[in-house]
Amino acid sequence: MREALQTFFTINRVVVYSIYGQVFFTMGVILAVQSLHHSRLRLAQALPWLALFGILHGLHEWGDVFIPIQATYLPAFLTKLLHIAQVFLLALSFLCLFQFGIAMLSPLPSPWRWVFWLPVGIFLVWLLGPFYIGLALIPEITDWHATASALARYSLGLPGGLLAAYGLRVHAHRHIAPLDLPDIFRTLRIAGLAMAGYGIAGGLLGPAVSFFPGNLLHEDVVFQAVGVPMPVWRSILGLILLIALLRSIEVFQVEIDHRLEEMERANILALERERIGRDLHDRILQQIYAAGLLAEVLREQYGSSASMSEVLDRILLSLNRAIEDIRIYISTLQGISRPGHLRSLLEEIIRDPRFRSLIDIEARIEVPDLTLEPEQAAHLAAILIEAFSNVIRHARVRRALLEARMENGHLRIGIRDEGVGMRPDHPVGIGLRTMQERARLLGGVLRIESQPGEGTTVWLELPVERKG
Image (cartoon, rainbow, N blue to C red; front, side, top):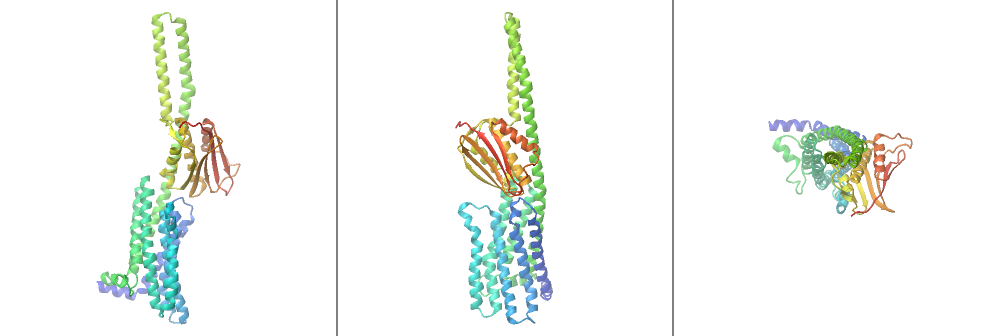
């Protein structure tokens, strides 16, 4: 059986490499088209690198089909140029794969920002050494082709594939697991395993060369062992990777819409709770206060009667208890339980996985750790949540900036994006009106700065009294 498979694939070598190139080229085109659609996902932000990898890698593999055919009637120097172009495409494709892996791990901590340039550095070293100098030192173009390709696989393909697999795994654990999306989590894990398999199949198990490890581990060893050539294995891994990524993006979009709907429902519920709380405060409590005042008047007029005085005392006690119960109920409706600290509140909101999984939030917090009253903390949190929700729903950007600073005894908080913006005559929705009302209750002002195509900034200015 093994011998039959080997004979079949040897005879149909052109077909095998054609399909291999087609798989990766198709993957690149599909992912490129997908990356054109607006998305706030970190995975979608890295997709252009993977799309470039697929397109360039497919073109490289098609070279194994067309170069031998062209060599029969093209001049030798043109055939040599085709070999050079093929090797260059291989290294460039692996460079894109490497960059995809780094993009999946972004944003990197400050001490590790230099890693973004690591693939470019390795590519330049390869370009100067094996590619350029090797071309001058190795007389036979086929020997140079094998050597330069193998070194590109070892230095860029293998680490790039493994790093991309690790990036998919980290992305799944860091951004998907907290959101409790098991289908997406499993699909990304499958994509990561396929990418790791390709990193080994494409980066380590390449054509045989005269130096380590290519003299021991190469695609001919696999072919002799199982009877299936390595391009077939790489094609299968490419298909799995493509299907898994497309499935992940499709499910992500559904889950993002669902998540935004949940946020909108939560906001509507908060507004309704606030309305009930205001009704209780402005109507019911006032009526109870009025009843208490009447009871006080009756006690002053008829307090000489011991029995009447006792009854009125009981009425006043019941009214005071009712007032206290309603106050507690209002606090519960508004989610107010304890004071908060300004810096902690801001940091908690920007770390909220509902936002971090959809946009990158840069924070510039230059305020002291002020103590906020419970009602202040609740209103401020609601304003910021609504502002970030608007960025996600309407701005069509992947990044937002939160600024907080003190100016002339006032707290200024801004949420800025560089999205589509809006016209000055844009109708004011219920969300913005609620934000403005909350700002008024806090004794502050809410301003919107926006122009079409220039983004939007929401400024909240509050007078703040230091309490700790």
